[in-house]
Length: 175
Image (tube, rainbow, N blue to C red; front, side, top):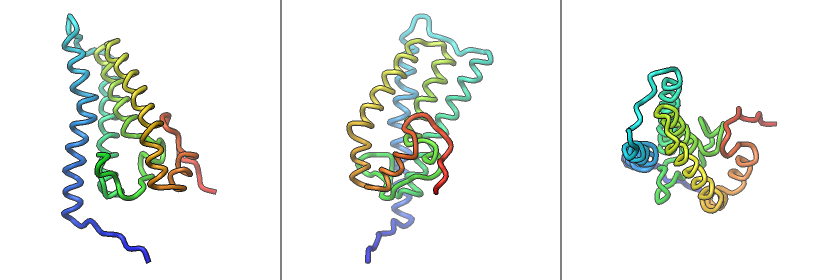
């Protein structure tokens, strides 16, 4: 009989704190700090668009930030872990946003960057977002997906077969 260790309240609190810090530091650096540095090194510093496109940019930033937060929450509550590779989820998480796309944290970060690109009309941010996507895609192929296949086996392989890596789509119905 297989037994599992229940984290309890203390373990969940620790994971919640770690996930919050990780979400602020890693995606926060990629989506807030680096764009800020790129924008403030331009002359003149671009001002936000005060028009409909600017509003769309703000909405994309909010949707992206919401996705990143939701994923961190899911990793703590459902996965009993964090987004940090040294303390990953102990359970395979395939609910919520993960039903639509395999990498909702990364998609959220890229949506936020797209929103910032639109909001500030910055080709530098567009180039940075494209470079970040290429880096994330390479990381997924070379490291993250093989590691998840080893950890979760057939469940992850079946998930990959039915859920797209980057472009969200409605979940496929089970047969």
